[in-house]
Amino acid sequence: MSQQDFGAASFLLPALAHDPRPFANDKRALRCTGVAVSVVIGLLETTFPNTGAHIVIFVGGPAMEGPGMVDSVKHYKSAVKFYEGLAKRSFNNGRTVDPFAGCLDQVGSLEMKSLPNSTDGVIVLSDSSAMSIFKQSFLCMFNKDDQDFLQMDFNAMFDAQAKLKISGLIGHAISAGKKSACVGETEIGIGQTTSAAIYFETVTPAGQALSPGSRGLIQFVTHYQHSSRWMCLCVITIARNFAEASSPSIASSFDQEATTILMARITVFKAEIDDSPDILRWLDRTLIRLCQKFADYRKEDTVSFRLTDNFSIYPQFMFRLRRSQFLQVFNNSPDETAFYRHILNEEAVNNSLITIQPTLMSYTFDVEPQPVFLDSVSAKPDAILLLDTFFHILIFNSETVAQWRKAGHLPLLQIWPHRARVCQLQYV
Image 1 (cartoon, rainbow, N blue to C red):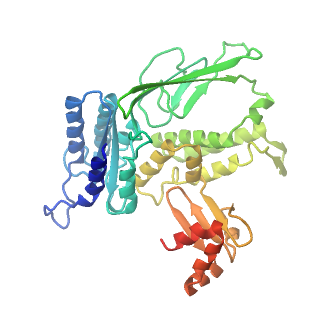
Image 2 (cartoon, rainbow, N blue to C red; image 1 turned 180 degrees about the horizontal axis):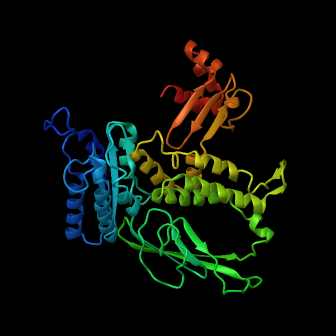
Image 3 (cartoon, rainbow, N blue to C red; image 1 turned 90 degrees about the vertical axis):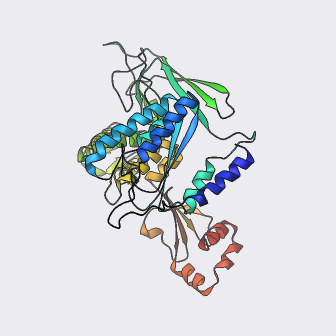
């Protein structure tokens, strides 16, 4: 995209306006979002077959007419099936679909979630298209690299070959439907394909143990189209040692952060299929089995329970996960739940951990900024707390700081460099 095109994109958002056609006060405006998306996909299929592209949908309300309408519960299943068909067509031609919703009402993100989920698109939810998050997210799509190419790729095909059995993926992709000896019998998520979160199972001949020193080889092969129109191939090969179930190397190599995200994706995937209390009970049983195997304790003596450093925070992550917005949908709209779960399957480990357990930073006079517990005891009289939930940034001013701010003395805090940024946020 040229500089002129980028400028045109920046002027597109202010030009968005409500449909001037009148409608009754007790009725919603007539929208045919499903038809519009279908027409765009059809045009691209005819004019640019098998060519990467982004389809951006600006949604100002729910679809009320035609296929994909979401005006009531009775249309839910038919709308989901319709958008899943559009997602399959988009995927087969290398398109990415990005819904941008700017409305206080439900716009149908739940029904059309297969469009961004299957094509690795972007979902933006905001109260209005005039909000900064809506505008900045749209303009970020046109960011360029140091060679003046858009920072996006298209039409990616991801394949995995391994001596292990591949159970599947949970992420933004569609199954390639391949049959091979690498495909496992246990299916997790989207079976017979692979993505960023890949699940394996170890299979050995019946009655035979793993041979000493044996290794598992995994090769990831990715084909994709760069924004420069070059077709690229990336191959990554890794090897890992096999270990018996009782081997101490399993505990020493345990990655509690990565395991938390893998478990979160499995749990959310199960919740999409069957949103019942059984999901939480399954999560609890999984944690109990892990503690039984790797914790040190004396039976019926809770004080003796100990976990090594590799496992110490994992129970806390599970505690936060089962109470997070990914599983506890009360007080969240269906569109918001679809949005939150989309983000969990999209972000890397660090950002995903923040969505599960937000970070709380404390800024005080005598020490450098440091993370503190998500507890009321962290609210010291002379502290400024900054809570990062990934979706929101919240700033808490203690009693002393609030008095200074009221008296107009807060800029004096900028003499401490590590609090200068917080002081700037006070005036946003």
